[in-house]
Structure formats: structure tokens, C-alpha cells
Length: 130
Image (cartoon, rainbow, N blue to C red):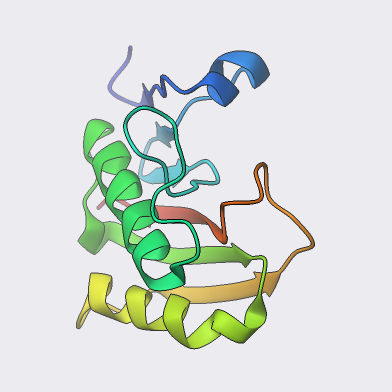
């Protein structure tokens, strides 16, 4: 692994089946794959709780970025894919709680479904590491 191109792996079944990693850093840019709120055993985290699911996804993202030398404060953009836009306040409140005074750009889009029906949200993040 060169210092200009790092990868953080993911041990979940989808990553193995579809061939992707959790995060990649190329130079100053670090990005994460779409991240759903999973427990360590791969099961969905707190089904039917949008706020807690969003926070869990951000925890996974934060660790993946740390694995490639980036930090939460380096995040400049997030994208939320949600299955029920009526829960926007729950998802948005979790975003605000996670980031506090650091406010990256945010996009929230409603989608018809995610990889499993228990997941209410999937989040991507992009970071710039100075």
C-alpha cells in the first residue's frame, strides 16, 4: 500500500460478494462506499429508528476514514440515501449531532429501496485531507 493510495477493507458479505472496500484514499481525497447501519455481525442496526441508524452509519464511516488517515473533521460532503423522506428530521438531526460545529455539504435523496428492507439509510462521505 503506497502512502498516496490507501484502502480500508470491509468484512461484510456484500463487500465480499460485490468486490468493494469501505474507503479509499488517493492523495488528499478520501471517500467511503455507501454505508448502511450494520452491527458487527452484519445484521441491521436498530431497525425502524432513523436517528440511530444514521448515527451508526456515521460511526462506521468515521472508522473507515481513520483507517485511511482521514478524520471526521476532514469530511467535506455527505450523501444520504433514505427510504422514507418523512424521516428527514431524524436523519438530519443525527447528521447535526455527529458533526456538531463542523458542517459539511449534505445531500439527502429518497430512494425506493436499499440492499435490505431493514435499512432506512445509506450514507456516503468524501473527505479532503490537507
